[in-house]
Length: 317
Length: 148
Ligand SMILES: Nc1nc2c(ncn2[C@@H]2O[C@H](COP(=O)(O)OP(=O)(O)OP(=O)(O)O)[C@@H](O)[C@H]2O)c(=O)[nH]1
Ligand SMILES: [Mg+2]
Image (cartoon, rainbow over all chains, first blue to last red; front, side):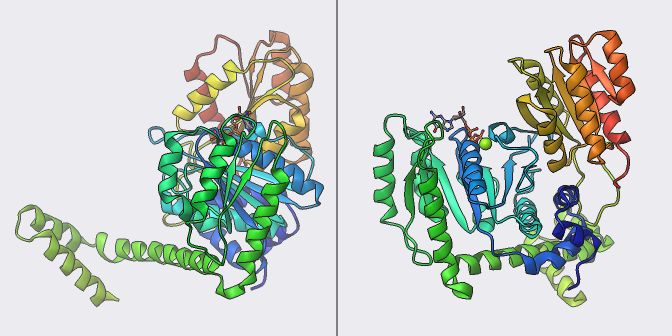
């Protein structure tokens, strides 16, 4: 597909156009989808690295040092930092930028903060779309920060090609809860703040658990120790990410990780359309209100009501 | 309806007002800035908190990347006569004059008048109420000119 004017501006490295298009994506604008369609062929090659973990473990500090490491190697870096919106006001304080020390005039870095805006599924799609825009813009690597185990706000799994989960020594109960589903959610574990006591023990624990993981694309989770205060382990972290990326991309179209991710995206988009169909064909019809009335009067049970509505939907298709 | 802007597609979500709160200059604490950040969040806005010791270049780069409607500058150091005009100048250079700027802190009246003339839309002294700041932010976001 030929690139329209907005897509052109992205390809030409117009930062303002990129920033605004990310806003459009967050707002779910139809025009943004068109641009994404045009840019899609330019995406899918950059490593997309999810950095998740509990509050305050050092995710942003690690991203800061990864940016420095990658810039030194001449790689351009896009970052998306997702934080939850307040369920009460819908607002958010997005503070991940505080940790980032960089040259503000360096065109090789683009950092964007995103609030979850209370749509779990929709957030995955807008984050994924923002990642694509960063890549089409020319970023060689995209880092995505999310709070939680990676399953709380964004399904990081839906977005990242490599999932890094960060913990710290003596996380106590949090590690225990993490451990339950830990190996479905991480390709690389980081024990950050490793200058603190207990780091080796935590790493040994994780390594032992890693041997129990079912390999995906032939990959067994890695454990890396880092300290951003002592600037230790960042090189090792990046090597582990790169090795995982090779494992994923080696398989090409047969990569389990990539195929699963692709399927989840299309299913999500399809569900969006089905929901819209439901809205337009059934829920806006006066017959729907009448059906609810009959349900309230106990003339019909909810199972039968759903069956009838479904039959009606099929009839209309 | 100050929060909404422009055309929407079916299923589109309303965009909250986005505000960058930054503290240029070298003085040390950011208690006031944090209080304002939280108040704006509680009023439904997305606040990008950039923290202490930001240069005007840092602030404008962040405002562009984050596509904010408003920049709020918190200043105590007395360096406002240099830092605030520089932020405005950089916004002009990047053709981003639609981004609205307000400032808070200890700013003498004659300086405040000068900054207003340069394009700062509102200035809050230490006694300004949070309600006033919130309402001003809403008004400024509504005024932000349509996208170019
Ligand atoms: N001792 C020690 N402290 C660290 C290290 N890395 C980060 N910190 C500190 O941990 C705190 C949180 O760091 P962030 O990088 O903001 O952590 P985060 O995980 O991004 O935090 P949230 O985004 O709020 O969840 C800060 O005070 C950092 O200075 C480390 O290696 N050692
Ligand atoms: Mg963070």
